[in-house]
Figure 1 (tube, rainbow, N blue to C red):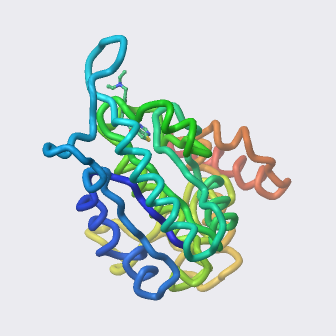
Figure 2: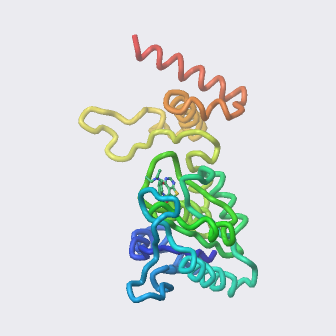
Figure 3: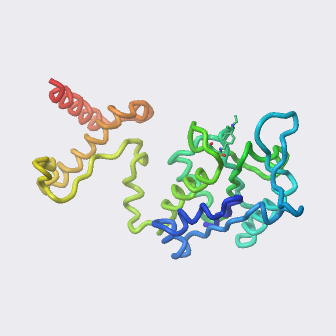
Length: 256
Ligand code: 9D3
């Protein structure tokens, strides 16, 4: 997958391109990340990229001429390999909220084509440029950030780890929290007894079926305790409902 990012802070992206899963995917050739800086497309001697908003008000707006040129260049570069027009995404607080389902959709739908991510700064990009270039707007959540760079990196990270052969083992993507709509179960490692605090006995039993059921019960229980709205969206099997009832009874026992 080829990802092109339009950003006035390309240096920020070394945070993901130089470490971990994404660095590995880039080295393996599964993923390429190309950065396009609007500043390089400014034509006045101050390299101006922003202007005062028409109608007044605070902040600045990214200018249409500069942004058109950088987007034209990014779209051209993105289509040069595959020949098809890339999906152009604007990171914006007004966008749809990005989630694991969206990440899976990007990883599947766009794995053979290129993606252009437009990260805005200031109050955003002149609307006429958005109307001409942007196919979709995505947000990463309801909180105010100072630009689209961190959201772009969040999207890249979530998508990259789902690309075929980008993970060491494909299993760990399948086992991810949210894949089955539940939070993850607790995890333990050596030592078995940590200052008197012991690992749950079932995990030491070697009974793989019992371990699987305990993990599922914990996942259901934690989701019920911490994110009950996730359970409302999910259809539980009879077995899962029973495990959750057991968890609820056990949590009552602990309270008294
Ligand atoms: C304080 C500025 N706001 C005026 C009412 C509007 C505003 C403009 C630009 C708020 C945030 C931003 C910068 N944010 C993003 O570019 C952004 C973002 C976010 O802030 N939260 C969640 N997802 C995203 S995606 C892009």
